[in-house]
View 1 (tube, helix red, strand yellow):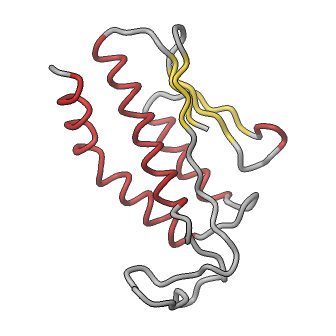
View 2 (cartoon, rainbow, N blue to C red):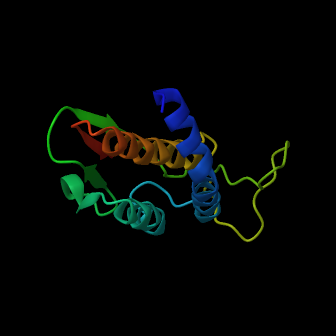
Length: 141
């Protein structure tokens, strides 16, 4: 199987999971250093995919590093998932409209998308290395 075909196929297969993850993190809108549930949602999916999890990175309770693989070059991917104060926004609205029943936080910079898409990329990268018998370590921060 060609590389592009593998990646495209895997991304299409797992897309619903990561759309759901992104939507859940949008709804939570947890601020920096307070993204407890958002971090846990990422960690659960990463553990299911065989990643080892290091928690409390740099003394930050919600920071983690997930790693797959044992040897070879390190492929590191960053995913942000914190919300920003004052940016609460109803999903799908094209005009400023705070989300009903939500806190004041929101994802005006798209961190809910960045985190979920980067997370999906880490999963697909690990699966590609495994499927092709290549060495490497994938880290998701």
